[in-house]
Structure formats: structure tokens, C-alpha cells
Length: 275
Length: 320
Image 1: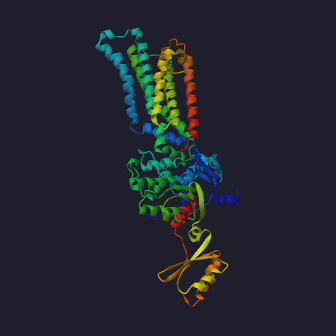
Image 2: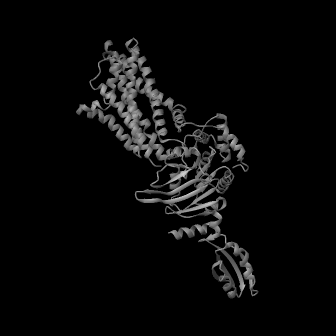
Image 3: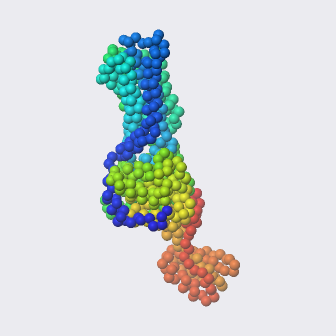
């Protein structure tokens, strides 16, 4: 270290007076850092490629390539829109939910395990700001890479396949159903991360709910009223302005309510954690 | 707020923490004066880090309460942390971030700008700890000592009114330790430093006050000089003599300001440890009293200054 480091009281105070105190409880700073992890690294390129390939690439293969290879696989013109929409929403909801679980599994667990959560919380940061910044940054990441980009490309793909522009507002509403589903699994994973110390239970419970919920709803149809097990069908029906399944409204409302419950529980639990 | 209260930065009253019935900290009563360097000692598991975490709001007390700058640690934790710089015992950061990014990230919790002043402060801190040439390397490539230096930089970036350091010299080589102590001495002018350490030499060198913890209990707290010069409240003078000392010993022991005289024979010389309860009178009278006897030759005379390690071990063994 330099032998004559200048720590002069008056210089310090002068410099200190020039600096503007930060407002809030650390939310903006953490959010900025979290968004930087998404957008200032190679992550955004990787995520763009993954989701466009997985959702739109598969869609393109089924809609355009397969019929070209085998004319008997040609989809009747009047069914293209509904089949294409069904493909898109099915891929988006299923792959997107899996992706959101995997992408957000470490948000809380890793911070606890590595000790960075304790380091951050030793700064003037509220526990609520910590959790909310994690939720918002991942929601934005999911919004852009899992939802908006593939939805935009899928809209183009469907329009090309049907050779006409699809009604935009219903399509947008259908896409918002995807986002709600992603938010459900995001808040679920964040909440589980505050309760558990290992990734295993977080992933296990999340995937159990994702796949087990769909299976269970076939044997206990009442579950479909309160769990997001048919969101891809609901989203497709909304996008195509078709009649909604009977469980649609209840399922959407309960999914939104679950998101709120998970978020509140995550905030409560994290406020009680000791580091 | 009264001026007396203003002079106390950290105040704990019966502060305690238990984990599943086991007391990690037991009814700690502590006051840390403003602009002091307060050393916090104790063996592993004594409760030092627990105390620090309670002050920072990272854990909740089981009993008692604590305040920092007059604010309760449970109700005003965020406000308190705005004025604190903290270095953890085993500092952890985001491995993918560089040193500069880490210090900048820390600074932004306290200041929003202007950007040029923030960057200047970040650069100043990195230069202060000798990381200016490694500022743009990812932390994952840092050694333990470099992480410690980074920790010191991020702890000071916000001009803290209270610097809490948990083992600040750990992982540092002797030069690094020397630099840390030098920084602490310089910072004393405008900040209070509360730090825990195992390195007793460092405590002896820079601390104003020392508190010693063992098994979660405070077993000693005093200004460093008082701790080093006294033993169980008494001051000890060591005298080495030649000749017939019995009469002189009786005369000394009969003085009202003398508690006791311990005698050892070594190599034909007599060594006394004279424990006194009035250091000022002893300073004026003891040597004169001894020299009255012309049959006695004084080989050495002086006030015993305890090595902190002796005091520490004595207190720890006593409390065990």
C-alpha cells in the first residue's frame, strides 16, 4: 500500500459534501446490478438464441418444414392459425415455465450459500428491496427473452403461415397469459428459495407442481380451477378469440392470487432469516 | 440527545443471543465511545461475530437491546447501516465482478452521484489498499489477502461514522497487517472503529479500549493501558534487589498503600512483585523506602506492564 495515503479530515469532508446520498433502501442499485447480469453480459445473447430456437425454431419446423417434406402433413388452411397458435402457446408455457424455474432457482439459494446476501444486507438495504429487485429483474428477463421476443417472431410466423395478419390485441392478451404463468413459477421459486437452503427442494417442488399439477388435474378436475394447469389452452383461446374453457377465468384469477401469496410469503420469510 | 449520549456510538444493554437454548451471547453490556478504536477479543466461539451481526441487524437478539448512534438496531437497522462500513470475517463478493465494480456497487448503496466523484472515491479506495493495478480483474482470481484488502476498501468507501471490522488483518501478510493498522490509526480522526481480532499485538498497538469475551460473556473491559498496567485492580511494581532484604520487605509490606509483596529468589538476587492500591503514592515513595536501607542494592525498578497476551490468557483461564 502507498506509504502516504491522504486521509485528511477537511478533504474528506469536502469530498463527502459533494456526493449525493442515495435514496431508498437499495432497490435501484440491486435492480441495476441484476439487470446488468442479464443485459451486460453474454447472457442476453445466449437467452435470445435459446428461446428463439426452442420456441420459434420448433414452430417453424412443424409449420413450414414438415409439410414441405411430406405434403400429406400439410395443415388445412382453415386450421393453420389455431394449430400454429396452439404450438406457440404450448411451447411457450411449458418450456417457458421450465426455463423460468431453472433460471431463477439460484436467485436466493446461491446468495445465501455464498454469503453475498449477508454482505448486501450489511449495507443500507431493506430485505424487501432485496427480494423485489430479484423478482422484477427476473420478470423483466423472462418478459423479454421468454415472452416478447418469441411472441413477436411467432406472430410473424403465424401471419406468414396463414398469409394474413392476425388480430393483434387478442394475441397480446394471449401472450400476457404466458407472462402470468412465468410470474407464477418465478414467485414460487423465489419463495421456496427463502424457505430452503438447497436447490433440490426448490427444483423438486417446482417441477412437481408444474408436471404433477397437470397430471393430478386429470384425476381431480377441480384442481384446474385453482392451479395453472391449462394456461396454454387458455392463452391460445384468448389469442384466437375462441370460446374459453370453463376453468379459464377461475384459473387465471387464482394464478394471479397465488403469485401474490408467494410474493408475500417470500417477503415475510426473508425478513425473518438470519445470516 | 444529550452530549453524554452523543459520545457513545454503540450501546448494548443485556444483549443476548441463543441458538436452540445455547447462549452464544449472554447479557452483554457494552459502550463504545465516539472516535475510539475499540478492540473486541475472545477465543473462537466467544460471541464476537455474533455481537457484530446483532449490531448490523443480520440476526435478531434473544434478550436485551442495542443501539448504534442512538438508534435501536432492530427498528432502525437500515438507517444505522447508512453510517457504517463493515468488513466481514470471511468476506464474500460476486465472483464475476471486478474489484472496481464491487467497490462501485457498494458506493452506490450510499451515494447516487455525481458519477465523477463516485469514480474518484472508488479509485482512491482501491489505491489505498494497493489494488489499483488489479482493479479490473474478476474477484474469482483474487487471493485471500487481496479479498481482504478489497473488503477494507468497500468498508470505507462511504466515509463511515462507524467502521466495524471482523478480523481485519486475517489473511494478510505482516506488511498488509501493518498497513491495516496504519489506516485504522489515520481513520481515528473522523470515525469510530470497532473491531474483533485474534492478533493481540495489533490490539495492543492501536486500541484505546479492549473488551474480552469468553463463552458469550464479557469478562473484561477497560482502557488498554489500564488492562496492561493492572492486575485484578492493583498496580504492580517489580523490584530486583541484592543483599539482605527482610527488613526492607517488612517495612514496605507495612505501608497502607501496599497490598502484598511477592518474593522470588533467582541467581542470588531477590525479585519482588509489589502490588499497590495507590499507584501515585507508590510512584513517589516506594523506591525511596527501599533505598533507605543501605544494606540493599537495587538492581532494577519499574512498574510492571503486562503483555496483553498474559492478561488475555489469565482472564480466559480465570473465566473458564
